[in-house]
Image (cartoon, rainbow, N blue to C red; front, side, top):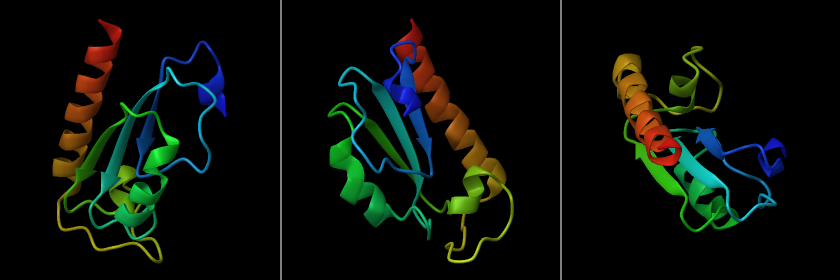
Length: 105
């Protein structure tokens, strides 16, 4: 809902997906998801992709589960991460930096 505010420049989804179409067609969106996420599964990300703008940048981090996006430990129903927290954090940082650099210059 906050993304509909005209002052919001973009939306980044960390192991998440939209349940409704944002009200703005000019919204820049980055979707980072985990390849073994048992909660925001790759299937759920794909099923809801059409709710986001056509130019949304989707990145699936192989070996990342849901908990890797918050590093808070095991969560019931989540997949088992096969990539370390440090590697996933570096990938998130790289993708987020590229997104912000592209859209703020």
